[in-house]
Image (cartoon, rainbow, N blue to C red; front, side, top):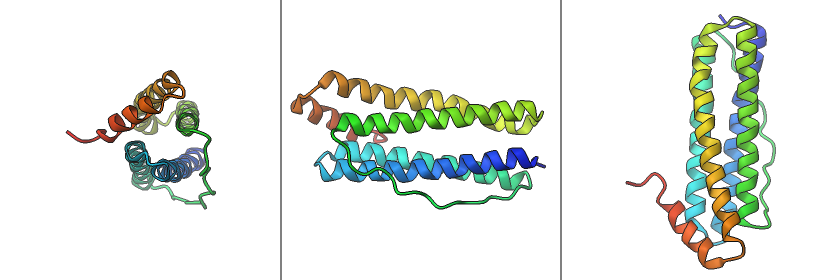
Length: 164
């Protein structure tokens, strides 16, 4: 059984994951409208991952006898000055996600909720990978500067994500 504090924090996390999903869809659409289909594809995969994370949290809350309370998702940012700015916005979302998960883990420790700590371990590890992945893309865009040729090459690389 979840404590009310943990249940409330998990619901906050669920809603943040959906907020992030929605933002990533908006970023994907922005890339698509700029003829950067590789980056649009890359952000669609990011969005799908965040939705999967939200569903994992929902399953955990339900499995522990808690109540899921979904909230309205606010309008996402949908206009960016550059590809670099769009990816920088994604990195800020990942950093916010990490901060929320860390706070949730700290609360689970405080509440001596070992099942929640165990479930959160996967998310803690996942966030290391998420921040690294988005950070690498941002770093490449920063190195590219104003080079349209490099931007197109990076777009081509981004299109390969998830394809073997």
